[in-house]
Image (cartoon, rainbow, N blue to C red; front, side, top):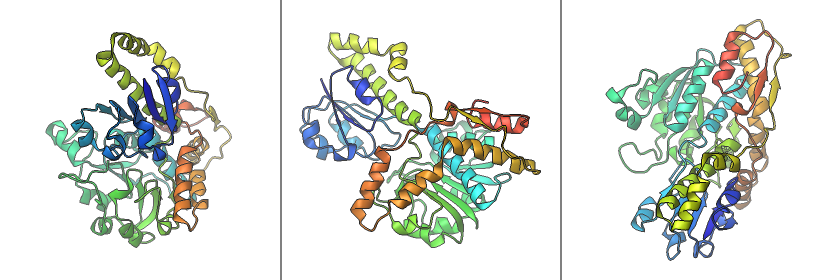
Length: 406
């Protein structure tokens, strides 16, 4: 059996080598020749999965170790009877960590507190729901716009999620953060869903975050309101990436190369999900010997052993000596900021991208991709224990709500 993988999927070579020969390639550079005689293919979002890559190949199973599916020609796979699987939710906690880090960093840089602010979450699926839980822990007021999810809920409303129309969310939110998939058809299509009319509806002084897909907004429309209606912007996803607009990069507070979901846990979860799905498929469809092999590998103890995580770079954060403020709100957010930014220095990610911004578009794109593929290990808040002395119950509960052990 030959299995082709994106080399940037952690644990993928070790996992899929339990089943056969593994060919590891850069996802954006995969060729027809690489997959021609492959039995299965597993990638991330940088590989376009379509007839151009797969026609005439022996690929009979495809797995995508990310949550989005806009890089997959699903009708083609279905027409060719090629089973496929994605990894919804694999990096949801990572994106929530990213949003929390961005907000606390902005508060420190621009001397504002989050208390009393309203966050509008556009899209409340696997990722948006995690962002919502972090927002609750931070004490933010919450508005959600997600028409398809709202329609799917019994009675059209859940008591813990205040669904509103997009227009109301934009008008009333101090923070707007986007977590929708990229879709181009249907009544809820998200392609260019934020254009000049929508940005004009936003509350003056808003903080805007895009950690969804670049094409959900008009870059020109965003640029037109940056510094006026939009006070601060955090951009992780870009129209046309890995090429990106240098004029947008120059004007946003935080600019990162589509790595909001790149925590180590998030990437490992993606690999684990598609590996287990492939094993389950083999256990039902393969020859008797391979079926038994797949069933054995699926045993939980074997999965946990194979995907055991290394120690985190920041196992502990001691906040005992953090300076106190007279204002309890400032004190709480200062302690949160200290814990969060020690675990995830979001400014460092932004500075790397900004420093790599050169005039040549191809060089910029190459640097963008390299920063994704060579991304340093970032662990989620759940991997870190925080030590406190005489901390308020509010600080403790907030840290725990963000996932820290206290």
